[in-house]
Amino acid sequence: MGEKSGLYYPNKIGRIYLMAMEEVMGTNGIKAVLNLAKVPELIGNYPPNNLGREFDFADFGAIGNAIEEMYGPRGGRGLALRAGRASFAQGLSEFGSVVGASELAFKVIPMATKVKVGLKAMAETFSKFSDQETDVVESDDKFVYTIFQCPVCWGRTSDRNICYGAVGILQEGLRWASGGKDFKVEEIECHSAGADNCVFHIFKEPLN
Image 1 (cartoon, rainbow, N blue to C red):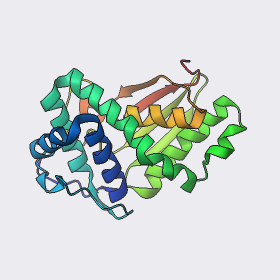
Image 2: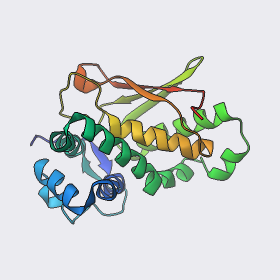
Image 3: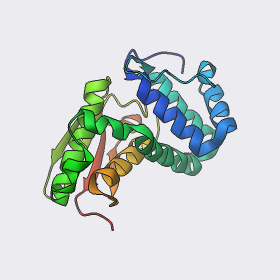
Image 4: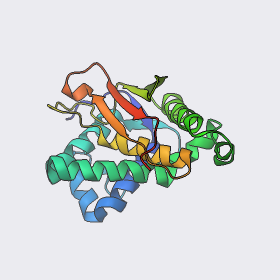
């Protein structure tokens, strides 16, 4: 990919994602992916655990592309979903308390409100701590979650929607916010496939 975006995640989010990927695909798997993504400097040398905005969206997109190249569309999808879920479980949930979405507060509010507050907290976290602008709008039966300048598919072109890492993060975030419920999260528009932005529908009724 080579060309950098000049847009950044904080080191901490890059670190959490790489650690989650290592957990999902093993040390050799992540090493091969980072080599293929042309970011060998990250092998055994993850970003520091701080909020410095230094993890380039282009590198994030290249890593996603490398996963798909190595494991194929289906295998890549499964790995990216799992890595996204593990990312939230491993550390992105810490950001929840920073934007006022603590687990205690969630225990006493109705389900629809939990989902709404959880999604807003996630969108605010990304908008506040990174260059990923994110927005949530509510309709009757769902929430529409939009990522502008999406790092997951940065620099990639595709004939289908490919932001599985983002879907995984949303699924796990909603599980956390709802106290263990699963929700249907669908990417309906993807920048890599020609849309302006990456748009996700989150349906209000839990699946379980």
